[in-house]
Image 1 (cartoon, one colour):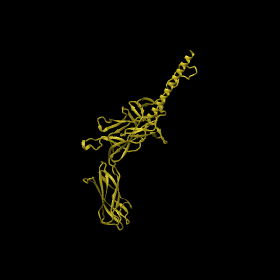
Image 2 (cartoon, one colour):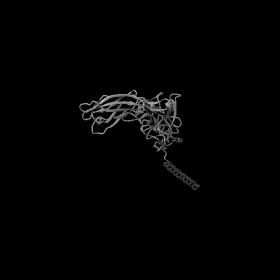
Image 3 (cartoon, one colour):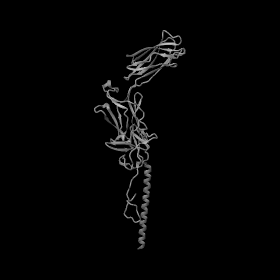
Image 4 (spheres, rainbow, N blue to C red):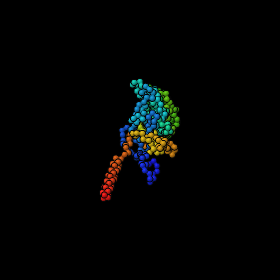
Length: 396
């Protein structure tokens, strides 16, 4: 408690006033919850929330979602915005790696004729935070899809023993229309054989998965040397419903071979992935928002910002769990690593809430101590009063 001026021995009536109260900045215990949008900060930092043009800061991460249609009237363009329970929007950095495609079939076109969804255009696992003043509202698309990646190459492996038998090796290939088709290579020993080694006639066929439609058929020949290693193959690619697929039988002893005495075998490997739809969102310990898709792929779409202040004790108490910056606290900032990249500076615990950092046992102990001190002081005053009364009576 500080007076208005420096007191001297003869100052009378100055009194005292309360200059400030300090915040208890001790970490509260973390309590698990069943919602991924419940967030807790383990360490220093604040979540930023906005309401109209006002920005506040809080450590209470019991967030919920509201729904907003980016394209008015189109329910397929809906996004869920992360908010506080009283409607303030949580801020962070959203990536531009997904865009709305009104023609995208999310899987219900044949059922009700509905199309449209947000589609990932550039899958990534990292999100770099923008500058503090560039943070915006976090939006989770409710219909988010991972685009099809058509097969571009099919590799084949195995052994074709020169036994004059028919052999086949197959591979699954993904078309640009998000269909899983079937590529089959049929090997028949050539009528005319080289002086050394063995030659096989090849028929490469691409069909729909049920075999009802044939997209392409190519013929060629594979020649193996005297040791059984592949020397050449005349089939280089086939058409997969409009998308070319390179046929790779390898070379020498890496890929398909033809060695007598070994059992016939065959296997394949192809790239490409079917398109997938959103299965769930998650938030990792760096605050990165990650979307999981039905095809097993993932992609980050944004990141929750964690703000810091030069002087947390200087924040203005707004009410409830909210605080605002002040001249004493300084401007909000991001902590940075050795390379200058913005970092959270705390661990973001999804599915957890930070409980009160007030310790009941300590509070009760302090209250008992203060009560005992008050009682002792009261007793002193009573004793002094009795002594004064006794002295007065003796003077009389």
